[in-house]
Length: 359
Image 1 (cartoon, rainbow, N blue to C red):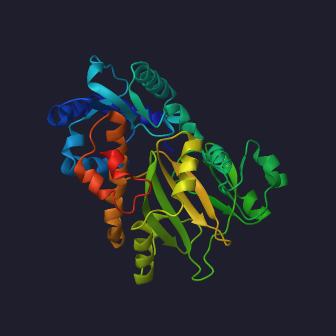
Image 2 (spheres, one colour):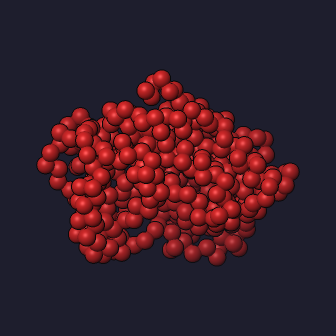
Image 3 (cartoon, rainbow, N blue to C red):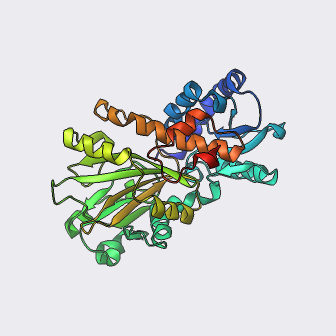
């Protein structure tokens, strides 16, 4: 995670030009009501929504015209045109900008007081920390890794807090950050805990396939009561990353089979979403050697963009479905009629979708 000072400096440098950009964007696109109030932070890139927003403006102008953007802190003079608030400030804002988090919470409270709906209540975002999220998702019966907070590295090096080797050392908050695989006490002795903001030890669950020796990670995107398979990534390393995606004809067919059908774990992952108290969330999961689902983490601000690798272009349709499920929820919660373009995309491979209810 970048330092709070860096975010502060970026916000100071970019707040005015970005606020002006938002004003012109609203004048160009926003029209009609009710509208969706979307708030952002000038020190935090909202790149994870880049392709999603481009798709809406190109393919769903009915929704684009209802989205109005503002930068924190913002003052709303006319609340009558809004029916929904969505924050795009990220799930760790209270760590890198506590003052901005307080302002965001004040704004959210004002929205709720005025009867506006809210997607992904900011007060619930802490639930997606790896340790607390695993605990909450475990309650409905899902398997998640055991997590132990490391407050005293010296003590942990002596007793491992009851965990067995191998284990992982990683940060409790944030996404896309490296984890360290620790196989022996000597490996543990070499770990520099100062590189972590909130270090935790995590149970290592071996999900390597006995058939081909590969590790697989599935992603399911939940938006309210519906959800869509987003991708299936195979790696030859335990830390499955898109940048190391393996691809051949067999893996391509396997991924297409997954993303072009309803996710088989829709019901239990929806239970997990409700346990986290969230509306929009991406779940990363695998299967253990006994074929049981293992949920690694939940991300309320998942990257919605198209894959960067050309070899993954075959899932572009499933990426657009992930756009559509989020857009569907925005429309439903804002009281906007769901455009036909969205509804038609959700007739296939989307769990829990009811066209009649959407209409």
